[in-house]
Length: 438
Ligand code: UD1
Image 1 (tube, rainbow, N blue to C red):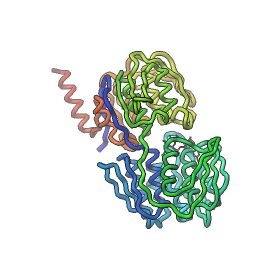
Image 2: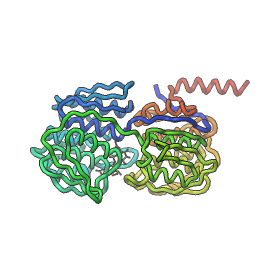
Image 3: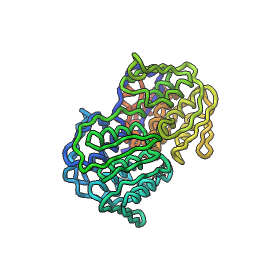
Image 4: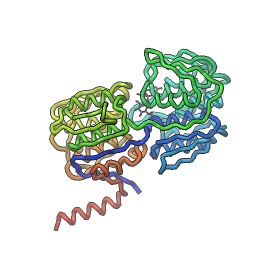
């Protein structure tokens, strides 16, 4: 039975909220455990659908995975990994499945997979991964949608990325840890989640250094050891809470987040007139929404620029701000689809190419909308909190993929948000209709 998210207008979200572990860090660090024979333990693991999916993928390769969702602790024993064929379903359900490529090439010297294919965000090829593995001595056979990669011995090289792709940087990094010699990744992605992966790899015994500009040096070792590692907190979840507070006129405190990894995003919130307190004596981020926020323009970019994963929720804040803003999406070719859903709520947005021009309105109104990706789901939930009446969001699978109990955490701040079966919603609708008639 289909599930939907029902969001009712909820003003002034207030209180303290705790973050889960970062989705984009945990998935790649789980994949990196394939490099190690023995049992590793990850802590602060979010219970999201993508983590369940990555667990299944590791199990399908021969790893033993135990997840204690209540304790947010995940054990992976990759001693007996022998399978190198990635199930097509896994590739289709989660693009991050491609991140087992580097570890399997380093560990087994082979991998077979189908292409992840396009998604709603655009074509999303894996050519940067493939090109650089070829440079490292991997032979790649491509047949229709099927890809096999084999190598007798990975070679350390100086690799220049034409774009600082997060996934390509991570895949090469993992492969290079067990390669003889020094691999250099020039124009590497340096997202906090990549740095968390590097921290985990160093704990395993990998030798990794940084060099200016944006270069990572990896000196291969012959063996890596099991680790215990705590996943960093999710900066994208933090941004989601801050924007939920911003559009509802709220005041919240997030203790765990390091504000230094959200600089440009926080700068934009301050330009809007919101009060963001962090640093000495605060320990986290204290946020108070402006009464009459101003519209600001922004463009997405690789870290430390404005994160593409917060573009959709930030667009909601611009829809309700005073004035006009221009939002430019430079990371993905097609990541403005949420704009057409926001129009259904009464937003004023014109989209052309990779740009959205937003004119702020004083009110949004609840409607039925569709979430097409993880961050669009969060954005529509935020919009629903500010909109008059009720917003019904379908595409709950996207919401569950990226977040651990986001709905429950928002409820604790005062939000009226519930995931329910569409049949229960019909019953609720008829109750409202009856009440209106009385
Ligand atoms: C990761 C994040 C995702 C985030 C993105 C950008 C994970 C699990 N996901 O995705 O949430 O939005 O970083 O911060 O960590 N590209 C190519 N060829 C390639 C690889 C990428 O053209 O071989 C393009 C992509 O289509 C996209 C851009 O480069 O337009 C950025 O992609 P990339 O940085 O690789 O993102 P992911 O690692 O897939």
